[in-house]
Image 1: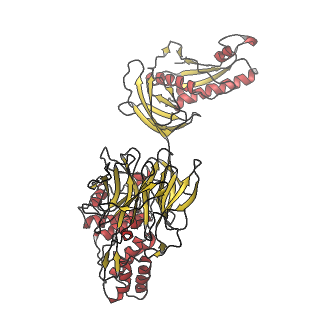
Image 2 (image 1 turned 180 degrees about the vertical axis):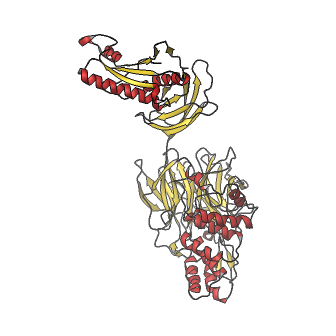
Image 3 (image 1 turned 60 degrees about the vertical axis):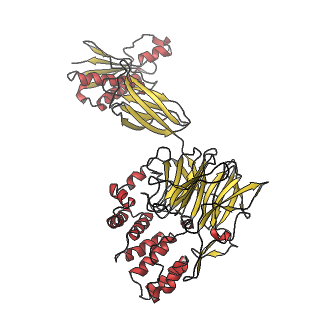
Length: 621
């Protein structure tokens, strides 16, 4: 059903004239937008052996208009066995992508590009034909979960305003079915959104709905003004197509205001026309700009995103096309302007996507190219009508990823950008190519990167969690830096590393004590930082051979302490070897409690015990 609100235009590019007497009935259904009946009629021609390239293309376009991607791709494959227009190859590629067949889609895009080399979609494809892997790598910005107020009918276009959800649906089974897809006509609905996230009291907005299609809608910040799309038939505005026995209306935009809790009469906006459609409104938070989709003159493609100023006296400016940074020769629709009045979200089938319609984001102030939001916002199917309420920190998107147009909840993932700048603690000089790791609150390493020429590494982490940064570089003492919990934004860590300054005598290398936890032999983070200094000395003096002696305190039996100290000595040696030092250059020996640093016997304090649990490094050669 969302295709109605891309615009009231034929998505197929075939002639309205029947090809021959055999296809006359099927073509009539097609031209009257009765696609279910059209598909059945064309299939009968196939069954009776009366199909050719024209019938296959019409059948493919029929399924394309109903977004039956499997059947559309099947019949486009047959249609393209004979020569077709460029747009047919583009639609075929879209249907293949919608089924996850990206390599096959690229082949059809190449055919499209050959036939329409000046089309911006073709140019974009040629510049980066293998863009799909990059879309999979887009940082995950949102969590998506199924909405709780969907039905087995089409539900889409949800927007949250002052704890009220407004959306569009075909759930009203008392309504007449529409020939496009045999579902009832669209109505506007309203529901209550509770603070616990539940949605209740879903109800039809009867005072706004007509007997034709109505919705989607957008509301002013105070909730007292509503803009919505509806058929021009509600004002008896249409053109007659006598040949096909049709009354051809357009999508129009309407406005209504609330008085004493009730919506007043809806009035048509002054820039509506019988010559083109206007739909999918989105009003800026300050109420000064209305964004919408239209195929009015000046559009770059089938349907584009436009904007118009809303003046204080209720009048409107001249509609403006948002240009090539947003629009393409394909279809762009379902705009949503964020609360900041500068971030625009919209759906596009013309920009590089995963398949069908994808949701994009554009910064209107910067005027840069719109970016694809990636998964899980986008899928291989149609994804559209993205809205987000910053105050409630919840949004909605619509998608047929499960086979039917449904509304999904969108929850923003809170991220913190941790920017680490590594410098020399003594001189302040930048330390390029330093190793920078980020660790979770349990000291598990999440990722490790090498600093750029500015000594910088950036990580994106979750909000409201503690992290730490571990920075290291040859010739400097490794050090860790705490990253405090944050609610978002950027946290900058100044990682100043001390140059290694180790005392080397004729008999030993003097480091700070390599302490161990009581009754353990694993290397601690503090111990590792100190042992890195030893590694640097050994790398700088290739002839040095070292004996690591490990000692315990006097608690426990002599035999146990000797075994424990031996494990500590070997753990110390193994750490140094793991950093690239040859195995023959360092050995370890456990001394137990035989050589205490402080001979305190049975009256040792905890500090004295800790001093005795140590390692020493003697120069053997």
